[in-house]
Amino acid sequence: MKQAAIVASLRQIELLAAQCLEGLGESRRQASEESNPTSNLKPVAARTLPQLIVECRDEGFFKDTRTAREVHEKLLPSYACEINRVVTALRRLAEGKKLRRASKTIDKKKQIAYVW
Image 1 (cartoon, rainbow, N blue to C red):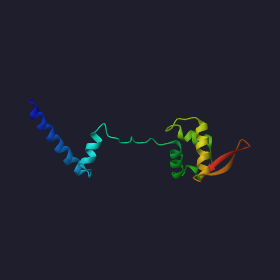
Image 2 (tube, rainbow, N blue to C red):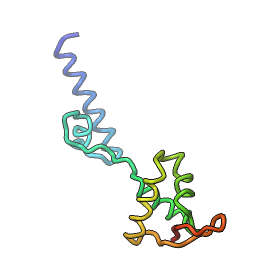
Image 3 (cartoon, helix red, strand yellow):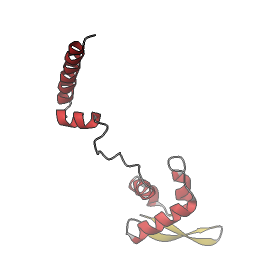
Image 4 (tube, rainbow, N blue to C red):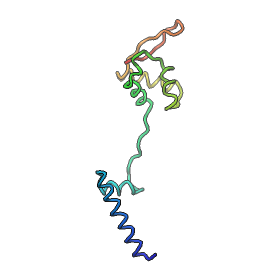
C-alpha cells in the first residue's frame, strides 16, 4: 500500500473514532490524551484498606460490634493482608471518628471491638 493511501485510511479512522467519542459525550482531546502513551495521566488508584473498612461500615457491617478478627475475615476475600494491618487501620479510623470503639466479650474475655 502506498504511503498516501495509508495516511488517508488513518485520517478516516481518526474521524470515525472522534464521531463515536462525541456520541458518548467525550471530547476529541480526551480521546487523544487517552491514546497517547506518553501523557501524564495517573493510573486508577486501588482501594486502600481504610477505604474498604469504611465501605463495610457504609454497608451496615458495623451495626453490631465487630472485633479486628471479624473484620479481617470479612476483608480476606477482597483484600489479603495480615491482621495487624487491620488492627492499625481500625485504630486510626476510630481516632479519626469514622468508627467508634466498644468492647465485646468473647470466651469470657473482653476484647476491643468497633461499631458505627
